[in-house]
View (tube, rainbow, N blue to C red):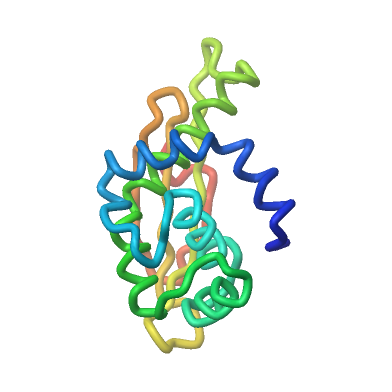
Length: 160
C-alpha cells in the first residue's frame, strides 16, 4: 500500500469530501473527541493503514507520527478504531452501493458479495477461525455472517 500524501488525496477524492466524512463520523459516534485525531479523514487513513494496509497498531502510530498525520499511542489508536467500526461499515456499504449503481449490476438480478477472512487469536501465529460474510449492495446491508474454524474454506454456495 502506498502511504504518500498524493495517493491519500486520490483515495479521499473517491470516498468523499472531508466535511461529509466529519458529519458521518460524528453521526455514527466515531469521532467524538478531536485531540489526537483531528478529523474523520485522518481516522479513516489510520484505519486503512491498520486494516487493509497490513500494519500493526504500533507501526501505524509510528508511521503517523513520522509523517505528521497524528500522534497517539497504539492503545489509544485501538480504542479509536473500535469506536469507528460501525462508521467504517457505513462507509464500505455506501461505497459498494455507489459502485453497484454505477455499473447497473442490480437491474433485475440479485447481486450478493460473499467473502471470508482468517482470524487468529492475539499473539497467535496461525488463523484459528474464518469469518464468512454476505453483503447485498442493493439494500446496503450485510445479510449473512458465519464464524467457522480455520478448516472450513470459502465456497460459492455458503449462503445460497
